[in-house]
Every structure is written in C-alpha cells, then in structure tokens.
Image 1 (cartoon, helix red, strand yellow):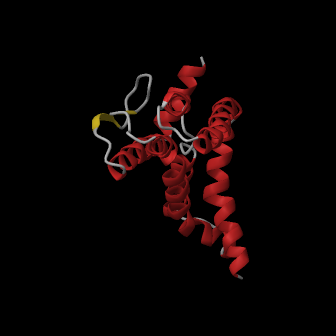
Image 2 (cartoon, rainbow, N blue to C red; image 1 turned 30 degrees about the vertical axis):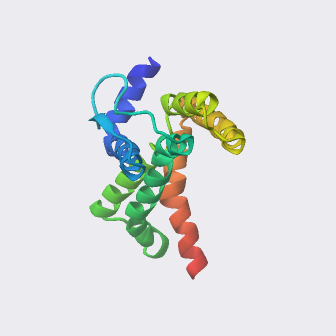
Image 3 (tube, helix red, strand yellow; image 1 turned 135 degrees about the horizontal axis):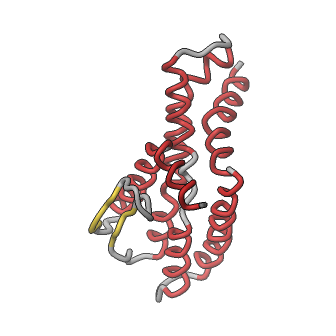
Amino acid sequence: MYFLRGIIISIVTFPGVVIHELAHQLFCRLFGVAVYKVTYFQLANPIGFVHHEIPKKSIHSLFISIGPFFLNSILGMVIAFPAVIPVAHIGHLTFTDYFLLYLGISISMHAFPSIGDANNIWAIVRHGPNTPMWLKVLSFPIVCIIYVGALGSIVWLDLLYGAAVSIWLPMAILSAMV
C-alpha cells in the first residue's frame, strides 16, 4: 500500500523526481564521476535513478547523494517565488500562480535524499580507504536525518517541507524586505 501511494504521489509530483535525478547527475558531472545510466522517471521501483562509478573521494560521494537537497530546495523556491508575491500583496492567484506553486512544491518536496542515497553515503564513508575522520563524523548525522526524512514522508513531512520552502520561505523573505 505504501509503495502504491508513493507511485501515485511521484506521478503527481514527477517534476520533482526528474529534478532530483538531474541533481545527482549534475553533481556527478561536477566532480568528474562517470555516469553509466540515468532514468529520470519510470513507473517502477525506484522511480528514478542515476548509476555512476564510485567516486574517488568520499566527499564527492556525499555531495552527489545530498545534491538534490540543495538543487531541489533552491529551484523549488525560485520557481514558486513569483506566485507568492500576489499572495502576499494582492490576495488572489491566477492559473499561472497556481501552476508555479504546484511546480515549486513538487520540486521542493523531492529534495530529501532517498534511503538509497543514505546507504551510499554510509557505505562509501564507512568503508572508503581514505575517508578522513571529520567526514565520517559529519556524515553520521546526515545519514540519520535522511532516515528520519524518509520515515517522515509517511506523515507527509516531504509535502510540509515543499510547502515551507516554496511558500513560507518566500513569504518570510518578502515580509523582511518590506
């Protein structure tokens, strides 16, 4: 049942899935990590994936895994920002505003790295031969937060995050500017 719900949510919010996988691929390219295969969206488990070589540096593995958090969060906020302005100042929305809000929220709510991403971080950092201790210490809470985020998606934490990044954060920025 949970998997079926996840598929339905992913279909409705597919732009976020595509950007999530694009972020993994972008960070691979940024660090010179070869990408073997990318599936941006499919109606199977996993919904999307990026198969790449094992990075030579553990820090690169960490950034490839958490890259979607940064890209999806920033892009979701930037896309939704123009739609939040009418909410804050005019009070009514057009179809375009609703579409931008949908797009921003759907992209932002897929910012959380997956359990697979957490497992990749943990495996590379724990067993990487040249992983410095500071990176091991930094990675442990990141992996824990990813697991909590994955569990939180059962109670719509990902949707709450998407709404916070796409609506609340731009509204806070706008009210701070006034």
